[in-house]
Structure formats: structure tokens, C-alpha cells
Amino acid sequence: MSNTVPTHIAAALDLIAKKTLEDETTIGSAFPYVTHPDGSWDTMSVSISAGYTGENWSHGNWFCGFWVGLLLTSYLHTRDEKYLQLAADRMVLVEERASDGNTHDIGFIFLSSAMPFYRITGDERHRATALRAADKLRSRLVVTQRGSYVSSWGPMTDPRGRAASAIDTMANIPLLYWAAKEADDASFRLAAEEHAKMTMLSFNRPDNTQYHAVEYDTTTGERLRGYTYQGAHDESYWSRGTGWAVMGLAVTAANSSKVDYLSQAIAISEKWFEALGDKPVPPYDFDATGDNVPEDSAASAIMAAGLLDLADLHPDEAVAAVWRAKAEWLVEGLCGDYLATEDCHRGILKHGCYSEPHKIGPDAAVMFGDYFFAEALARLAFPGMFIEKYDRLK
Ligand code: GLY
Image 1 (cartoon, protein in one colour):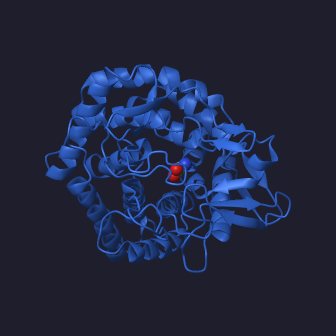
Image 2 (spheres, rainbow, N blue to C red):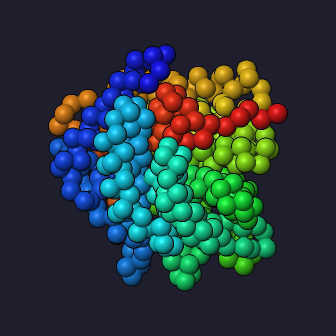
């Protein structure tokens, strides 16, 4: 690794490399997702897909790829081949999910695993897996009179699945943009850009806060309702959502060369930082009330990763510098008070919040928080090696 990497970033990458290697000897074939209150990982089998049981929705295992991503960033940081071997062993398990069309999370699973694996090793097997997954994600596109969106939750044969879209989907669309270039098939890019447009039209409120989820009329494309799954209430400002949107807008700007998407990302980020104040980590929901509202360190990790892309892309270098500084400030804050440096805590970032309403990891390390923190670190420590580094737009 280059010796110009600031010490706090190198130390955080050291911690990821140390803990992933240690945990590989204890977690068996399941994948970690949230830490228990004692700091040990709760794990889930790779094969648990998303779906409804009656009226109850379960996201299933949408984080298995993130574990592979942590192993891959550890490889890039240490150049120790054993991380690549561990990642390859894990991919054998993860690959089965490339034909799972039940959820938009197929994007998360493979953009954090097969996509960087191919970037790092050039192994065609991973390229083929990522393309297979992208094809499934594209098939979730619902075309309406008002525009098109990638539906989020549930089989496409279930009307609830077709009508639902979540702000999180914005961070799944990088897989589509990647596939457009790899397969030389513009339909992937068109689907992703349509999704980004429809999402900003339907999720963003006039004050630049966002709904977590939207139910669409699948014919007209009108928003039937905005609602939440993991936020405080349907009209609330769920803090993780903005970072997901910023990631999707930045990659859309990169792939369309349209600066307007960056302007949208800046408008919603300004609102987010205004709500954040002077702490580097927000509450899980800016509108949550009561005592002991959990924080969400994952929200800051996601926002930092998205803003680093935005800063690479923005045509005005002075504006880019402002947003890069904000991203770096978030990373520094996470490296300060939020790193789980104690051995008994197996996560990387403390005080993430998977779902306060469901009491799943309401104050825990969460696998997606650890992963997007690693993505932000990778952008700073080895730009372009883990995921694409974008050129500045004109
Ligand atoms: N499903 C993505 C999230 O919990 O933010």
C-alpha cells in the first residue's frame, strides 16, 4: 500500500484485515450480518432469499457479497494471497444467488463481490456471475406511463413485489451500469438511468428529504404512497436513505455524463449535513423521538463513499474539494469514535442500526456499514483498484 495513506485509514484497513481473517476460522459457512449485544456476529446461511410469508416480509441474506468485499479489500491492503483464496471459497457459496430474481439486493450481493473480484483478478468466472446477476436485476424493471423503475422487494409475480421500490435500490444500480459497459448492451444503462430519474421524481420531497419506500401504480407510475420499513414513520427522514440516493446519483452522472444528477446529489446532501450538525454520525432517523435514539454509523459510511465519487466527478474543482473534505471528515469521525478496536466486538463499525422498528441490530455493527466503510477507505487508499474511479465530468 502507498505510504501516503493517512494513518487512520491504514489502521482501519488493518482492523478489517485482522478481523476478517480471525472470523473466517469461527463463522463456518454462514455469513455475518449484525453483531449481538456481546459483540459476536449473528450469521445467516447464504441461501435465504427475500420473500413474503403471508403478509410478513423478510429481506433474507442480502449481505453475503459484502463479506467477500471485505476479504477483497483486505487483499488489496495486505497483498496476502490467502484473502483471495478465502474470497474465492466464499464466492462458490455466493454464486448460487446470481439466479435469485426475488430482490433488488441481487445488485448489492454481486457489486460487492463478483464485480470487484473480476476487476482485481480478471477471472472470467466472476465476470460471468456478475453479468448473470445484472440480467436478473434488469428484469425487475417495471415500465409505466410516467417512467420506469427497478422494483425492490419480492418476486415479480407478486403484485406487492412489482409495486414496491426502495431508496436503497439506487445503490444497486451500479451493477447495471457496469454490465452495460461489459456486455456492450445499452439497455442496462437505460434501465438504470430511468430508475434514477423515476426515484428522484417519486421519493424526493420538496424539502430534499426522501421517503424510504414508494408504492407505485404499476400502470400509470403514480406514487400511491410513500412509506417506511426501517425508518421512524412513513413521513420521516430516514438517515441511511440519502446516502443510498447519493451513490446512485453519482454513478448515474458518471454513466450519462449529465452534471444535473450531481446537482441533485448535492441538494440532498446539503439537507443531510444540515440535519447532521457537528457529529459525524446521524440518528437512524432524523425524525425519531424519545430517549436513546440509536445512531447509524452505516449512514455515514455510505454517504462518505457516495460523496467521494461525487467529488471525483464534479466538473468544478472547488465544489469537488468541498465535498471531498466532507467525505473525509465523515471517514475521520468513523475512524475516531466508532471503530470496534476491542477484540470481543467482531464488527468494524460500532453503532450501526439495521432496523430499529424490527429491533434487528438496532445498535450494532451491521455488515453493510462495515462494507461501505471499506469502500470509502478503498477509494481513499487504493483508488480504482477495488471499484471504478470516475473521471471528472466536463
Ligand atoms: N436494505 C438496505 C438498508 O437496510 O438500508
